[in-house]
Amino acid sequence: MAEEYEVRGIPSYTQEDTWVKVMGDGNVKVGITDYAQKMLNEITYVDFPEVGSKVVQMESLGTVESSKSVSDIFSPISGIVEAVNEDLMDDPEIINRDPYDAGWIIAITPSNLEEELKNLLSADAYKLLIKEKTS
Image (cartoon, rainbow, N blue to C red; front, side, top):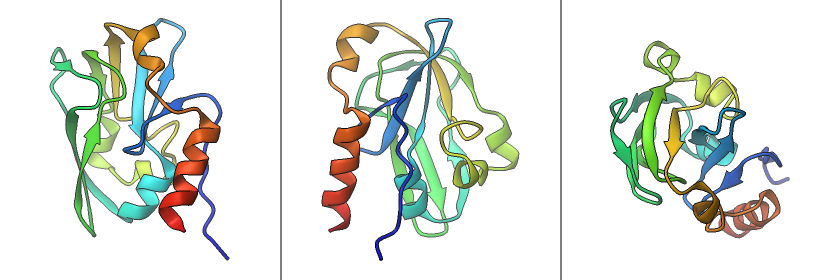
């Protein structure tokens, strides 16, 4: 039986397995998907961008290291990094346990949110992408 991967309907997704969720204050949170964390296995380290730095849509904002590999994290949205999830510094495996809530990686003040969201995948489109990757 194929492994199940959680895909939530709230965020938008990238083909590079990151998600973005718009928060009530207009900022967005970014993380990696359940599929990505399962492919990586045990996450051992997260390399964050600095707070105040600029990130660009579909460019690397940092890396995630695991027992298997090191992978780039691609930013789903352009903007300024407002916060990093400091809990991941001491316990990066939070991403393995809860990739969509406690395992968020950075918060961004977006610079062109409405236009850039159009470039991302819906939950249904991301589910189809996972199916293609795993078949």
